[in-house]
Length: 178
Length: 122
Image (tube, rainbow over the protein chains, first blue to last red):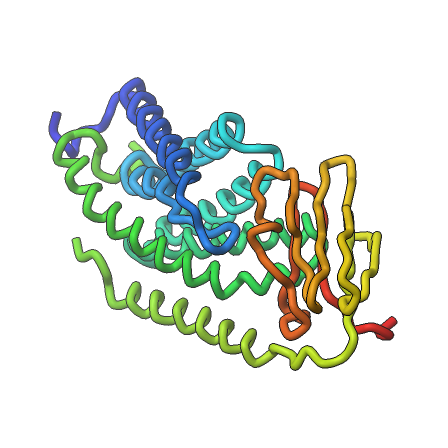
């Protein structure tokens, strides 16, 4: 099929499901990478919503993100870790969707802001969970790591997206509703 | 498609500057650590114990979520062992008075928080 062609509904669902599985795999693999500061991570799983935003659209990307967080907590996490990743995920996705929707930045900028906001969301939950604002000392670490990790994931996404489009896996952006 | 636009570079630089400024702020806020200090152990936001740092002790913290073995030694406090999953509190290492205003040991699974407070404050 030509990359500009619209995908059939069944194919959209199938594509989204496969990519959701990929992001779940990324989440799992990442849990084995040790990090010096609690909450710090690469956020490779965020690559998938980043690829979905400019191809299958915001609602699909949101569903895949939420599904990934829920499944990953169910399979590898705990109720506490679910709360943390949900907060991070919601804040991060909301910001990414807004930045994308209003064309404030390109894919890399979307990813960087997503990474930083993910960490801000987690710190907010930690402040309530532990009942102390002291956890904010992690803020500089998490802004720094969110920026660097977001940059890496964003550049990766920018390199992968055109290839997936050429291969006919993902369509061009669907901006207009008919 | 360009990978990095001018705006994105500005975004990256400003985020790095913000984190750098926060690092600097935290560094400047470091106290001298002089005076007498207590290790304050709180569970679910309530203080359960207050231990003087100059006395070496072992405090066994127990709650329904689990157990943490808290050790005070040489004017510093640390969690020696815990039965939680992530071991963040153990890996945190020691908590010393110079960093009292900024640092703390937390065990999120047990909802335990260890901080240092200057004695006679309250």
